[in-house]
Image 1 (tube, rainbow, N blue to C red):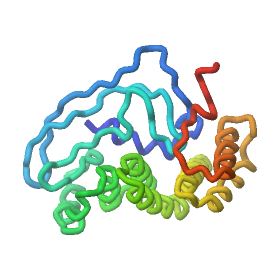
Image 2: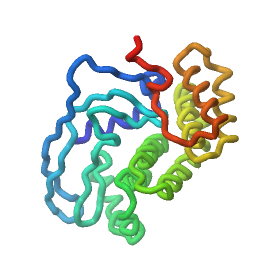
Image 3: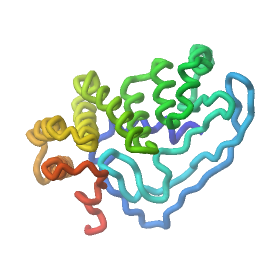
Length: 241
């Protein structure tokens, strides 16, 4: 059941062209699920979960949420008793390390937060990479149930994206991080900060390239003080080709 969830780490490290391209399938869209039985690691409670097995992506937003015959973010399994989120395939050692944290008052107090927000909390404390934690937080913003929750998640995310991740990793990783950081800052209405990021990115991108077009579109949105979610197809419409 781990494949679709574990693959999410690649969003921040894949070329932006790959994560930003619009896919117009030539076959009928399909989203399928399979019911699997899982066991909670800390109390042995067994429960069923509908795992997404296949999907078709028609479009992506500028913050990488997918649209089409798909649920985005992908469903995560959650223990009905203690709220443990199956964020990845944990080793026995990781599960034992996490036991007191999952059963703590701090984690139990997060039960009202979204699954991906809690997944980020768990993954960070399991010692996984800051980039994966950031990706999970990004997906938590897609789940946000209110404007207040979105702003809270997005603000936490920008603190990570504009910190160490902006200065580390490969050149491609840094570019992708800047693209996402600028998008989230724009969505938060922090236009000056977003403009600084995209203006800097524009210096290194060909104006007629896909990245250059997205950067120019972002700068235009900033000038209009637009905080809405927009899709890549508004910039790179594959249907017209």
